[in-house]
Image 1 (cartoon, helix red, strand yellow):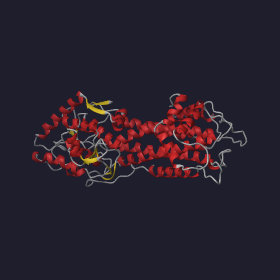
Image 2 (cartoon, rainbow, N blue to C red; image 1 turned 120 degrees about the horizontal axis):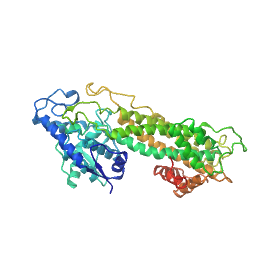
Image 3 (cartoon, rainbow, N blue to C red; image 1 turned 30 degrees about the horizontal axis):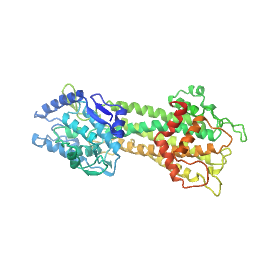
Image 4 (cartoon, rainbow, N blue to C red; image 1 turned 90 degrees about the vertical axis):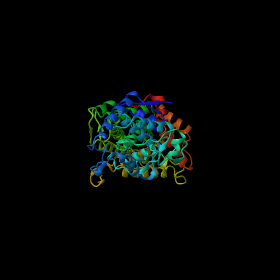
Length: 512
């Protein structure tokens, strides 16, 4: 099994994906253990002094003015975890919780939090044992970190609350730890606070969304090319020299991908045939511009994610010179903004894909295709309601594109009077990415059927490879009406698992 070693300088996106999705093992680097030990010595020295230090010997947030005596500090750390584990609603997905735990461990190992090495090791032990704390949908405002979600994870470290075992069964956390030989931690000064105070949940969801969108933007270029082909459109608008004079990198990449898919097509360029037209509709002609703008948004979001992956987000932080200083680095605005940007871009990509699908089904605009791509229009409804489903998904995505980060609800007796709502932005982006996959799958289903209905014309080799692969995957071709949901589910899986991109790249080589 792949092992990810966590040092002091952060982790990579591929590390997060390996742990969150693939169950990779986690180990602490020697440098991380040394940094943890050094930072803890600073915290212990401050804890022994009579002067109050925030997070070490005081209360938290609006209660930070109270000095806490040594006899109550273990209780203080335990209490902050218990009281902050106040999430409600459905359980969050296992991969999200594993990303959350791993990214908190990344910050702990930076040596800026003052957590003991044994606490960090127990965090790694939980991940390696496949124990996943129960984390709920609601509870984070994205400021002072993802407090409630991280608290539920810290509660499991203490052997309290509920967690899911490697067999998928939810049980008391104490039982699961005992079965795997893991000793619950007894938190000391600053440790409870350090386990709660980070943007790890929203960052983990950003990293996973970026990975999914990489595949989906390539998939959308492919389905746009298939639709162009099915509509007898022209590929001249994809010429590199046209995109060079508006040099957005994403636009150029999208056009190049579409051109690669269409190479050798016998369906493109029929504008002057039976139904002459000067140029294709915007949803076809401007596909690279829309997908390209989204790609550039993804590129910006990736820069933000990389910076966060290299960050140590905590409050207060232990500095190399021995100071323990309060700060505002836990504010989720940088991550929240790009999560919202991505939801907007995903909604627009879905919207233009739906317009192409509708054009394929409309006999007045499809340039000779049967109404709704039906076998016997009137007796058969064809893909009429598949487009309804696609439209419903797009409408939902437009609602999900409303920014969460534009909102703020003051909390903690107005001490935390401006929050990022980044967790909410991440949660709705996950739904948007899910829906985008379905929208692309429906365009794929319509476009492949439409190409097959163009009798006497030969599709591009890459297009034919897609048709062959998707039919082999159980997505049926033209014919009389049948139970459509299984076909759409199979098309969704084909896109979601990256098989659409793989089918094309087997012919074209790697897409951009």
